[in-house]
Every structure is written in structure tokens, then in C-alpha cells.
Image (cartoon, rainbow, N blue to C red):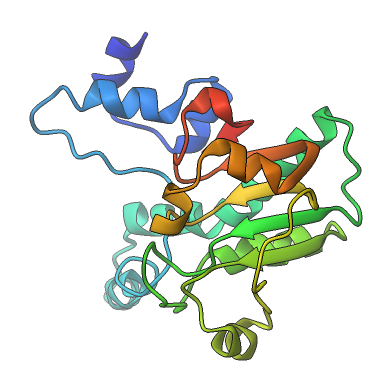
Length: 212
């Protein structure tokens, strides 16, 4: 199965999820080819990829060319927050967890790991989408300046983590502090049936409820 996958152009990661194929398994298999570039799925923030391509597409369209590939990639990235939340909610419903007024922890707010930069972070897309479900969103990020997060996005990060509090935990940014945690420490933050959604492959697939 994997041999067939890696010999064809990779489709958007949503297709892998629908086929119940683990993305990392595909990437590891594809990595046996010398010229393969192991780009992992996620929410792409910042400016280099998240914003700057729009300058190019604007200029291209102004001279009559429609850069479909670039725009398609941007549409996929812009919709990833909504997609992640839809998957998280479905996982909660499968466990018969009440979504409304649920306490959901997002671990990570910066646009990439091990830096305090909040510019154009797509984790905010997840926060905004979760709030449409009437949940209580909690954010923890040891790299973030709380005052900046509050000023830029109206988000007040937690100073500490409370064990046994959360109905779902979303590992959104691969900070070194999170990598150093084992799965037992993460699960201890949640209630007994809490959903663990690992966006950044911090743990093997069998130890969490789902990975992107």
C-alpha cells in the first residue's frame, strides 16, 4: 500500500486522514528515497509562507495570470484550523464527551516551536473555531509573553497547568518543553476519558487519539 502511495504525488493531508493512513508512516516510507523532502502537515503561520506568497499572487493576478497552485495551498492552510477542530469535536463525541462548556487545552500558541513569535499564528484559528462550539478554551505556552498574547489576540495564557481538568488536549506546537514530557504527564492533565490530539507527532500514533 505504502509503495503505491510514495510513487505518486502526495495529495493534501486530509486525504491521508480519510484513508486511515498514518501520515508519519507515509513520510518515513517516502524518506527511503534519496531526494524526498519530509514536509510535515500542520498550521503554517508567520510571514514567509503564511503571508508573503500573497504579494506574489497579487502581482501575478494584476498581469492576468492566476497562480492556482499557490492559491490552492493558501486555501488549504487557511482552512486547517476549522478542519482540526472538526476532527477534535468528532473524537470527543465518539467518547460521549459533552462539547459545550468542555475545557479544552491548547498546548502552544506561537507560530513555530521554541520561539516567542506570535506573528500570524494559525493557532488562533483553532481558538476562534473552538469558541463557536461554546467550549472553554485554555492556552498554555511557556514561550509566550502573556501581555503580548492578550494585546494581539485577546488570549490570556495559563501560568501553570492543573492536572485532571481538561476534556481534550491539543498538542499544537512542538516546543522542547512539550517534547520532554511523556504521555503519562500529558494524560494526567486531562480527565479520565480526555481526547489527546497530537498535531506535531510528539508521540507514537498508538499513544494518542489522533494525529494530523
